[in-house]
Length: 203
Image 1 (tube, one colour):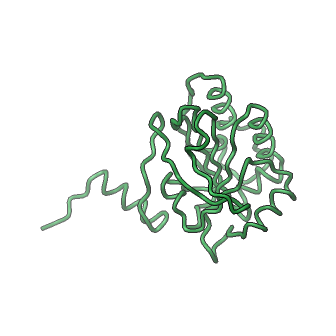
Image 2 (cartoon, helix red, strand yellow):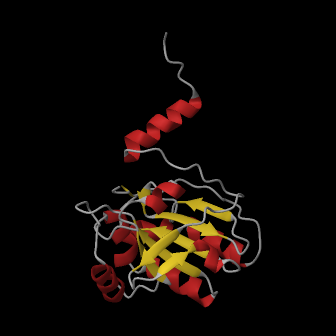
């Protein structure tokens, strides 16, 4: 008896090929999955404790050229500063497994924050990949925005040009920045789902 290939099965197989596991199907317009993670100060953080705030989740890997594009140019830091000015909670998440590209200790993550003049609200270490898999994070960067009610309002790429070249930033549509401004203003997000691009998350 043969195996019937269905769209759900294809999606599962794609998830296994991509990250060695299946991924959660988070959806814009639905409650964002709660999670508990440890930040670089050793504090346990949960998404639920930020209810009432807009929250950005940024998957990152400092060795990824696509991440370097946005940090070396100062673009990601500018996003973070604008978010802070609007009382947005910005959580950078590192899901690189031990021994894989982008894995860092808490001290190394803090050194990166200082050396790059970055300003996330916190950096969450997710070496087991639990939070990444919960959200189906595929790339670094991969961006998610959660509104004040805890609903996922945006997921996808930081901008529209799939490139590791910093000179492309000014020509790109800044998807995350535009979506964040809409969420902060209490407006519907015009482009709530876009294509993420970058290095694969190193689960």
